Length: 498
Image (tube, rainbow, N blue to C red):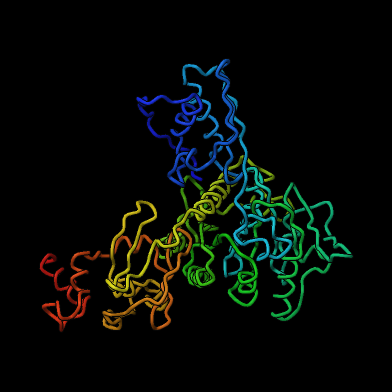
């Protein structure tokens, strides 16, 4: 949810009689959820409404989708204000509550220890040394400070970081001798599991053994009821990462990078891995982005990696973190910086990241599953933008020719390597699947998988529906049967372009 709620203009009095309860609901309908674009009444947030007509007392409960909603205070204040403005109301009592949606998979499709976990968030960098673990730990404690029930899982067996970054009183995981269930340690209200808490330190073992161990630690732990479980991924895109994504339904991923071009190339591989596994990336963290000195801002590692990820993959949020000695020092001391200094500038930046994660995860549940579809009869991709619900047509070949992946564009120079003539005009997609609410993954006839952000699709030239219908008519009805449908559309467009 966004940083501030919006409100609809006050509606004019209806000519039809309205009950006092109806008047209250009409007043509450002025409050718009900025993410869903719906009133809090239409969202079903208003519960247990009670109206005492004699005394003018009104009470109700606002049940949000997450206790970490960053605008819950705005909702409460506006609800009291708008209902209190009714002339007959003497008092307004609002109770704020949250009931997270049911897990993404049904109970029988989730590992037993994760059945009461609403959202599993991956924090990944695909490259070591960029501050991923620091980001994961501080994000987890930020979500907890926002009111959510949170756990964190350290998925790095070779070099677990969590035992250094948090200081629980009990530093060894407990196991039930009968059920073999693992119970996490707890620090500052956040549940934590790491191989480092198993009393073994770091491990030296082969990949398949590590994948099995991590899967066992994650899925057999009794996490209890959690709103968010943050998983600190190990670097890379190998067996461990694939096993995690295939065994657990991840709600979203946060990508951590640094400004260097080399970091971008590695992170791009990770984003494509998540896309293939249907895990939407909702935010990019650019660590060690800059530092301020002598009234100037310096960028020691260059600029542009974060913006390039956002631009090419359509990820909606970019949060930059400066080079701050206190951030790493707090991690080394066993007390995350957002716990040590919850009102500092770095903690505020993590609050921005936490709000972005909460907002995007909530929006993902409202995302349309048919935002982009292939119309075989028209030989066109029908696109409906999530923000406006406007539908338009795109030529499949045009979409394919504008791919921005490493297979089509040199990631070092930005030079386009894919030639338009390499893509036939009659190319067709075999499947179109959503990647969160910011992009779709299109699989083409040759097996190529393309991630197409909505921003890219919105920028491409659109087809005329009537012309496309004419082009798709039977050959006997066409005046120019020698031309393909795509060629006819382009031919019609050329006079207008000239």
